[in-house]
Image (cartoon, rainbow, N blue to C red):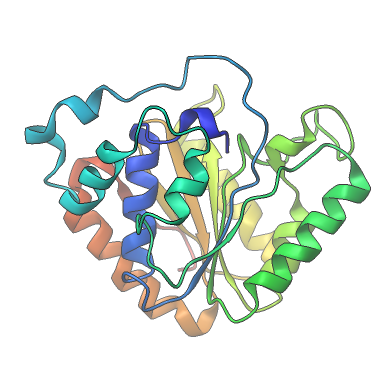
Length: 237
């Protein structure tokens, strides 16, 4: 997650999804921003939707108004988000910068899991998504990915895990199905849910004890966000 992209259309959907999955704080959530330095690019500034309230407030009016109220002059928008009630006050945040260094990365996730203790839902927000072979840990840009052992460790600490995933340049339906299959094997769990948008997909591995709850929440996401967020239960769920 980069500070420079805060408040774009992907964020509106992302926070809307988290607000529903947590039932506005009924399920305590830990957010690991996996924050990386801004890069000066402008390709992620999809914020024109904020100028069209008539079209966009119907999905989550309170959230839309909060995002629209963020001052353009605010330097640290993620810190602003943490204190603005975009997510429920019970939400736990981990906002430190994540580097490519292997030892620093280990310490980063050790610290996060201590913060996340007692939170049924954990959300990882990497720049790109789940690890790829071309970016092994410790190499340049490793900070843009969540690695399999980090996901495994979090799930087996008792958390349901939600992960942001950017779409690569492949057929999307097949990509989501393959990723869901990989996550089922990785977590040794038959249960995977996905929440698809036009730009990214969010993959959820629920703990078995929370499966019925998250299925219900998924149906609520589909009802409230209609064509904006597609909910899918993958084989085994």
